[in-house]
Length: 231
Image (cartoon, rainbow, N blue to C red; front, side):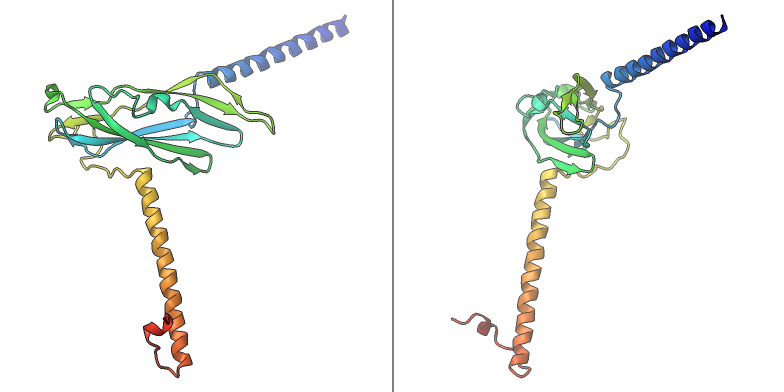
């Protein structure tokens, strides 16, 4: 009798353990499918002006950080972010551009620059918010050398941003100073100029060393600059 009860109790424990394991796995899958992945994607707005005038052309920069690890990667549907397709009411979109991606450990950054203009006189001396925008994305998971498995479509709500029309700063501004709007394209241009300047320094240092060596060869007299380039 006792062995039979022990066997039944063991069966109950095994069944209970299996149910708890399946429930935990289901909860984890539910959490993943609902998009509770704070590091999968993070985006923020930046403007060239903290306060604008009606009819004034200004820039709004959207920057996003995407998770990109050997095990998983966030893939964004950028079709709705294209400057020719995006709608940012009540502003008019007067073109824009997409900067080159910038990789970093476990993340990938992309950036869009939009040229906007407010033409309606109804917002004089008011705070105007950018409309609520949502970005759709999927999580790609990799396992070993097998192909990546793409998850279900998820959404990410962009943070709010206010602009004041004319003189005062927005009521929800964190700082009264305008932060510099430096784009990826400007950073890439500065890096290119810095590389050119470094090469120029190396070349000038080479010619300086060459002229100094040539002066010692002529008994301490500095050779004319024209002698370095004989005709």
